Image (tube, rainbow, N blue to C red; front, side, top):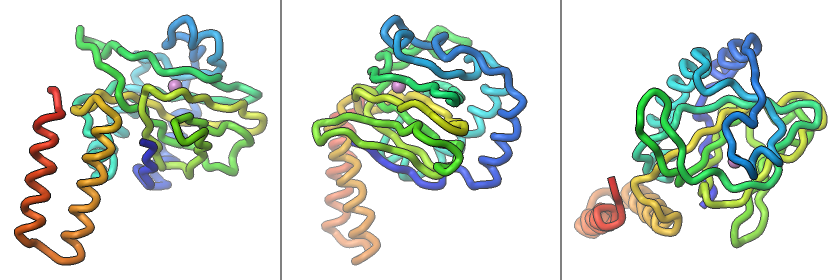
Length: 226
Ligand code: NI
């Protein structure tokens, strides 16, 4: 399930983050991937222990966790601190699947990556190329969103970032462990939740909606692991 979450950040918030990132010391992006990823990854990112990255990441994660669409689609249990990446001069990240387990910094906890998120911090007209391409059973989806928008997709999917041939593509990426491991089950809950919200808006509270809401929670109770 690919979900576009618009306007996670406002344009002034994006501009403020970009201003801080303009002074950042970028490092080789291969520091955070395994053997396969290192073969195909050519970009730069802030080191995982960068104080600037951690501070900006904390702000972003707060905004994302306050976003009802993200919460309904990802059902996150926990997320890693967002990373910040930059691509220019032909940099790219060839086809790969994100690693299944990530270590959380500063403690012994690990996290299973169920949902991958990319938050765009450059406007589409700032760069050429740099599409995020995600493959699923319906084919290959090309994603290039306005700055401040986010796309979330299953971490199990094959994806790539095509070469950035002009300009700079700045983005933030992070992974979440979902309360519901299965993408198919998460998709059903997301659709049911959306239908309930739409019905509530159209006809208001009624016994049938109460029953549907009960079904939602009872499915979540069956499918979630915490
Ligand atoms: Ni990836």
